[in-house]
Image 1: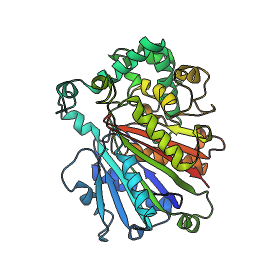
Image 2: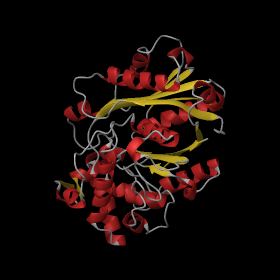
Image 3: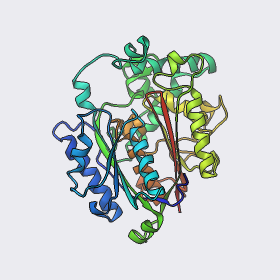
Length: 385
């Protein structure tokens, strides 16, 4: 389905972090109202809604949407693990593109801190024994160790990515982690080890949050906010995993490499662009070694050259292809349901030229990538018009 007539009308989010005294409903309402205000619309203008969350009681999405009004609009719950928010965004884009509605809302929310307080070991009931008892950090660590063995990658490379994202987060007022000093590679390496070679500062925090995007026809964007650039959705690809050798130790959490590579290719083909056209990228960096892999899998450098791209400074603000300009999952945070919509929030600001001290010069096309539970991958491309 062609998406060229779909625009991001508005975005909103609350700062990710630990919100013990704020309810999930309050977080979701704050993000949704900010997005509606940013779009210049009221809730009555929304024709369809997609709510993304990973945990929660039945009908939670309906309950939260009632906070905005009782207009009779259809509401659909979306869940695809870490990719939930971006998949809700995709569904909203397709609802507009199909002509089902003129305006669609995608809202993600989660309180991961409450899940963490609840305890529980491993990843719960898995599809096989090893999937259910090994913590995600161990899978990511296995991936990191494998690259170190095969490519000569050093822990300093992972630490450099983490430090970059912590420092990007310091420029984002909605980031969970906002260091008051420049984070260094040595500082990251000295933080507590959680699963060798990954330290605590190389991992995303446990946090809460909500984020929202309003999508509609491009002519609406021009009519509602004629003073600012339009941000169009030019591609949204979603794929599931395929079997590859070594899948037991890679697939359950991060997915086989082919999943991100193939999904990215599909997105580029949909949009009629290639990686050289992309101004900035936001990727799944629950652990720092992921970002290094995605430099290659998303097509920004040849296989085996991720370390070189990093060492050149190409992926930091001011570089050729800045990654995770808002701090990424490592600094901005990763509550689950709203993570992908936080990426859309960042891309919308960047493409509108409203990202402040972290603004990428002449940003024209932005990429948002997430994997969900090692079983799905989604890559979305937005363009400034």
